Length: 220
Length: 224
Ligand SMILES: [Zn+2]
Image (cartoon, rainbow over all chains, first blue to last red; front, top):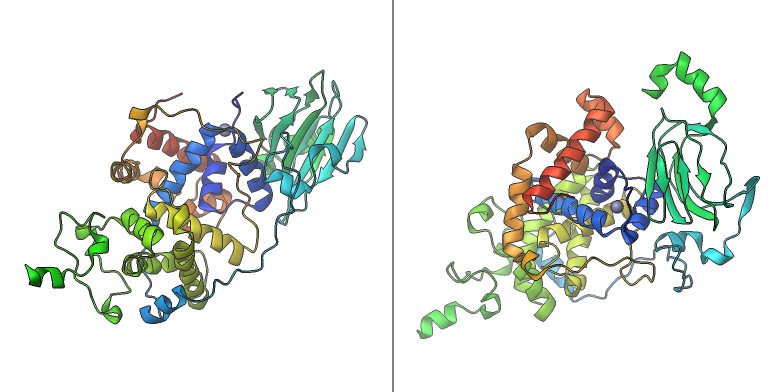
């Protein structure tokens, strides 16, 4: 089933350009695994990147071509990189690369209690001011109404939820900006598992509406 | 006849876009210009063919041509992203060495040589300059949702594709082209690009959205 709600175009552009923070990139890459349509868009954006490279101007290379050619036959130096954790490949809920960040299949995530009916697991992502969090919401649970100190992206992995702006199922991405307060309710049936990427703190809606009223510039 | 055979001692390049132009002269190694002159625009070689020559028979002359054209551009791209000369030089060389090693993974039906090299340079930049990981999807992942079957007449020749891509970029209205360019050349979130242009963030976002819509149309995709 194809996703109906996609990341915003500027988010895909930033992913293609390589300027998107790592937390948001995990969500985008996970959506791309499930969405052929956005994959095609990102490929088109990368093609633009290729054209930009042609137009990037030139800065001369200081090494001699002979030295560089000599390196072709040299030993292949593989840089030590933080290897992704190998995780069971039979998990069809968590797409790669999300599964590599979680470090386990969906059945063995080490959930922590958040509020009644809501559990969470924070991904080990290095991104300043951003948090990538997996949520597991019991069927029918209302998540407390909240606004955001910054943009929030949510992608559904299992089950689904509905809020003031629409209904979201596996693969769907909802982007809530600083001006939006929403109250997601998990669908009945199976638990809703989703990935959220937030910037700044979540603000309970009572306080949020006061901020919005007296400091509208904050959310402009 | 014999003379022309000895002159043309680079049969490896035959069939890779040089058919219509005179056989390329083989320059002594040290004379191959490293900073590519703009003459390339006139004699634009088939870069995808050169990558395939590297993939199929480790053709060093093909590599040298790719290096001459792309390494100075990759270095410039990296310096625009804040690398100093030494770091940019190092990553540009690493990009080209990656091309040499991974040429077998290059698929000309999916991307042009320039696009592929851009993605290699981008990923090395994220690793070296941003010091973060680049999460990417894995087509062998059991959770991966494959592309719908492409109709045979939908696919384009690699050459035709790159002409259309350039046409798509050139067709963008100046204000859209500007934000697309800044997105690629400045390591900044769109909020900062908006500030720099003295525009509301929403305007930058909508220009990027409109640019994508135009590019889809220019590449001959059907609107949803
Ligand atoms: Zn999508």
